[in-house]
Length: 147
Image 1 (cartoon, helix red, strand yellow):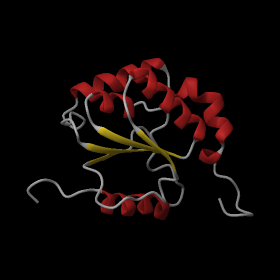
Image 2 (cartoon, one colour):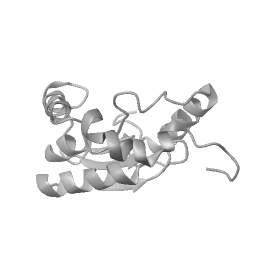
Image 3 (tube, one colour):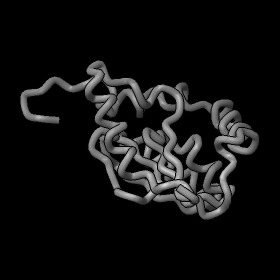
């Protein structure tokens, strides 16, 4: 955040720390497990490199890692990343967690699949900021096999 710039609501760490149990309930985690197992879009072979933008406490990061994906979770909230790290440890899976703003994060030619669940993407008031995220996702995505 630039000096003199007002903080955006999603940059408020106390919001995520205070309300994460409500926003990311055990029920929601169970739903994510079910979706990761049943959705053809999320059923990925082991070794698939997945980028989870706005990963929060690992709601989808953990189930995908359980299925053998190599998952990188990116989130701006240190509190949520701490929860994701704890959940991964409890689940016995290895994930990579990066504290970064999704508008800034890019790692060229690294990921086979990019996800951003719930309302993590599209939350920026300025359309250009949302487009900035997409412009970073494109170079981070590896070409599909056979293309």
